[in-house]
Amino acid sequence: LLFSPAAQARNGGLYLELAPAWGLYSTEEVIIEEGNDDFSDYPVATFVPQLKAGISLFGWAGGEAHIAGHWWDWPDAGGDPGGAGDVGGVVRVTPLEVLSYILPDDVKIPSLGKDGLVDVTWKDRPFDLGISMGGGYTMVGEDYAYQGSYFQWGFDIKAYITPNFSIGL
Image (tube, rainbow, N blue to C red; front, top):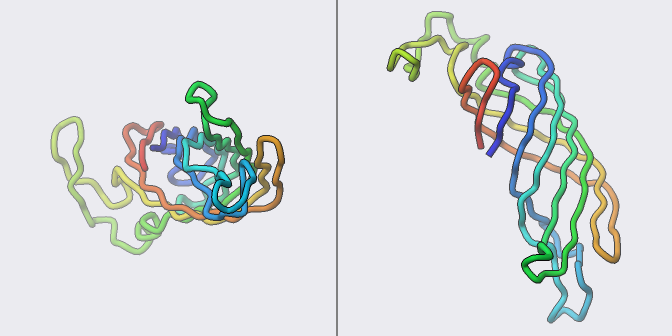
């Protein structure tokens, strides 16, 4: 789920996002509690809040810087708590916005507005799709800290609720 006042930056500009996400580690090299292979614990997929700041160039590409936290085993749940912190950046492309430059201005799509179902131009559509790729630096651990670089990629879809607010996945 993604909440963002980035809707105003749709055609170019600065934006700030609070992006609740779900994250996981795709390796068994990060060990929380070391034992033999029968009982080593690895980080599990958990809630990962992110704070992002970005710039949208021409509405179809841009860059984002972000900071995120990833934790596991809440102390109240009786687990062995730990976590990670990530700082990095991505390049983000919105391919549907590129179509705004290719399609004629008179192409209309149905959209739900305050007056019911109305036709809007492709440029004014109430949704967008994003593809991102980048990396950064991370520190992971509880008793023993791992640190180093990471690679990330992602997809998102946003629905523009108002000119200054969007929600998405």
